[in-house]
Image (cartoon, rainbow, N blue to C red; front, side, top):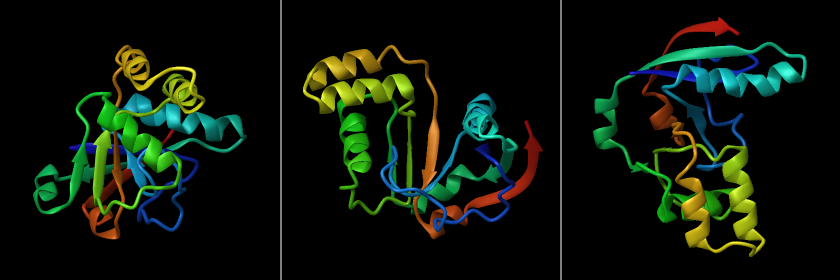
Length: 156
């Protein structure tokens, strides 16, 4: 499988030192198998006057069999609970890799409405089901990042 990471610089050797806390699946190196999604991730850097660069990796999915993996196949209550835990900085799980949908701006607005008590969990899940499918794969340990083999980078 080919995975992409959108940034302002080429990343041949991903690491956890540069990852941010309190994001969708916690601290980790985020990739996607959807090229257009990586392009969109570059957009925030381009808007700040930097370059947009997509790093491309080869990833052997069979290596996941001996890693601690959490996978969300759909936006669900379990997915939402995990996003809320990670975004609030309270996640203490030991997953090597987390796979699932992105909490984009529309999703984040729904999460904020839930946090503020304006909608309940059932309404949040109902709203999330209508979002355009996307996918992110978060490598949360150095052992997991080692599964990525840098192939090339492309300016966007």
